[in-house]
Length: 338
Image 1: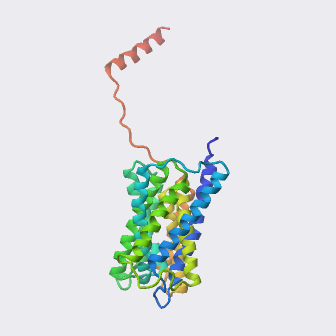
Image 2 (image 1 turned 180 degrees about the vertical axis):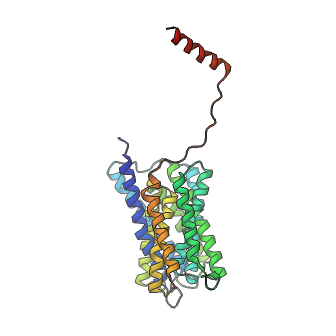
């Protein structure tokens, strides 16, 4: 098949970016809206399990469509190494998904998205160790982004952060897991030739089993029944979390983990404003300007920096040996004689 043009590839990356922004904004907002008196009426572990089950059903459906169209085989050969990778990724994702319920009891959606916007810097550092390089403008965008996040999060009047110490500890843990799993997932998806829907099906199967285990055992165990307390908003949360998982896979396949986390930053900018309106979170000129910085930086990264070539490692200039000098001098003499 003819390779895709640069404009086409960039267009697909933009579609993936905006799809993720819309789906993720809706999902995080539903996390907060599904609460009643700052508590969830349903089990967090059962919600994650139902989400993973819906993701699995969607992934298998998409794979069936691809098989029907003759674009892939029904049962591709699956590497045990890939299965092991997805087992580890499932453990991280399940932990992070359940952790999100506890974080959003201590913080608003804007703060969660804001804190996770540090992830592009962590991803850039991790990808550097895997051999993926960024150009200078990409690095500038990542650093400016992190500084803008710190500006929004710090209360200059009180001299403290906007969230409790426990909230910041959970936010730090969630951000670290997000960055680590983002890089790991990107490397796995791009490192194996198995269709992405089959890879997703393996990931979601493990996620469902682990969530079921978390429902009956461990710190996420609840006294509520598996389907107890589900309101229409709770079911919408299940749906949008499932769509979010598929949107993330689409971004990993056609872009990279840093683009995924810059989408997080755009979500943050939108949710900071929404949190000020719906949840009475303080917002002033100070935080408003920082949100503008985040939006502009994201625009520069997506529309300019992403199109520039990555930096190549510095190469040592070759040393010309005496024999090479003599041969060069000899060739020059021959030319002059001619």
